Length: 275
Ligand SMILES: NC(=O)c1ccc[n+]([C@@H]2O[C@H](COP(=O)([O-])OP(=O)(O)OC[C@H]3O[C@@H](n4cnc5c(N)ncnc54)[C@H](OP(=O)(O)O)[C@@H]3O)[C@@H](O)[C@H]2O)c1
Image 1: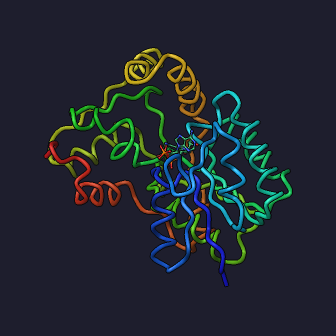
Image 2: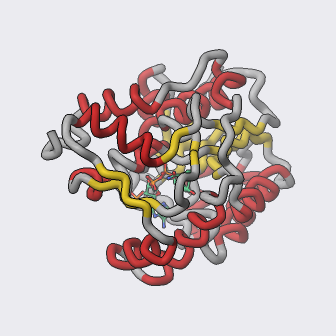
């Protein structure tokens, strides 16, 4: 029986909004954490942490922008301390596969004294429909570094289902679920699926990591580009080119295929001018 609200940090983001909506749909009380939520939460302002944590025993936590940013691990550690003091019992942390700093974040949570579940995720399919690759897709291109590397890209609705299971069912404490889609795909193969689904050519454009850096720098700043390029170099070197069974272990079903993601996103209007 869950009588306290469940906290979702990053509740307006890609995974957090889905987790919050799925908890709402079950009639559960949700406390949303973001900078403009009813109780504001800001990773940059520690005075906002205790108020949002008070009175909750379970929380889903996404760190923004990424655990690889300077100071992130220290902030996560400080957040976990406040969470322990305010009575949090179970934290579900979103982490990334094959990332040094994400692994450090996982260790912080493992050693925090809190009950935990780690959801260590592959690349999000929704990067194409809601993230920074949506604009290029609307322009008919998928510019990606990493050559012909394959990635078991995941539909984040599956991540949200795993998180909700971890927050609402017994049996997930202490688990680390490595969550991926059901198959390895090259970015050229993903572009092929998007071409079929959207109904016009989406061209995979192999780019260098230097080009990737320039693209990110053009839409943000150089420092952000440095960090995200480092993550891209780290994770697109072949180390993540295998599927894992986290979705099946947590949910007892297979993850959704990229083609299903593309059809659902198309039907929801993700690429309105592209058809
Ligand atoms: N993209 C991928 O392929 C991938 C793969 C594996 C893991 N990840 C991890 O996923 C995490 C991001 O999760 P997501 O994609 O679900 O989120 P997201 O869509 O990037 O949304 C970010 C969330 O953080 C909030 N936020 C922004 N600045 C904040 C601040 N200073 N303090 C508090 N909240 C802030 C935003 O809310 P407001 O702006 O409303 O405050 C929003 O709710 C990252 O840690 C990333 O490493 C991503």
